[in-house]
Length: 142
Ligand code: ZN
Image: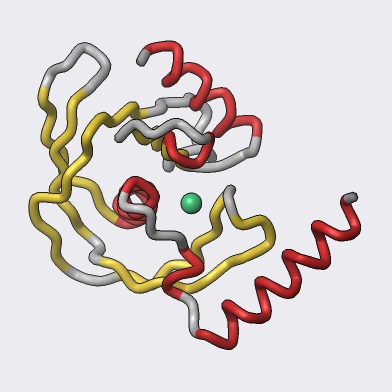
C-alpha cells in the first residue's frame, strides 16, 4: 500500500494533477491521493483509503479536468463543504472537513472509485464531441 501510494504521488505530480485515484492507474484499490494546494510551496499529499463522504453542504461550480480524459474540462456543480472519513496508511481512522477546491478534488476522486467519470456528467452533445476528438487524437498518435 505504501509503495502504491508513493507511485501514485509521483504520477500525480508528474502529470501534473491535484488528485489521483488508484483505478486510474489500473489498480483496483479504494485509495486516492489529493493535493489541492499545488500552488503553495510545500507539497502535502493526502493519502486516503476507503474515503467516504459523511455530510455535505453548499454548492460550488468548478471547471474540472481529469488526467484520464486529456483536454476535457467541464463545469460541474458539487457540494462546497464536505465531511470525509478515511483511513491513512497507518490504518488510523481520520475525519476532516474540506471545502472549495479541496472538497471538489476529493469528490472527483471518490467518483473514480465508484467508476464514475467526468464524462458521465457531460451533456450528450459534449460527450459525443469529446469521443470524436479523442479518437482523432488516438489516430494521430499511432
Ligand atoms: Zn479524474
